Image (cartoon, rainbow, N blue to C red; front, side, top):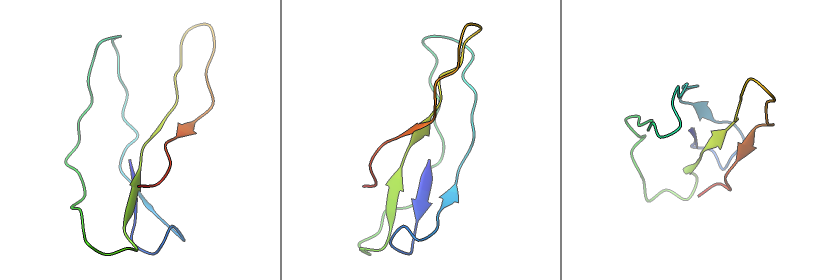
Length: 62
């Protein structure tokens, strides 16, 4: 998870985290929401396996 406080000019990264099973779940204490229009969040992931790795994919900022 990434969080920005300056309209996406820079961001703080929380993670990376590794998931070891197909149905596992990762949670993290989230950064507090804010009414500030300069704060935004996004989540990024990379799928890896013994056969191949995917590129890193991120959600849009929200």
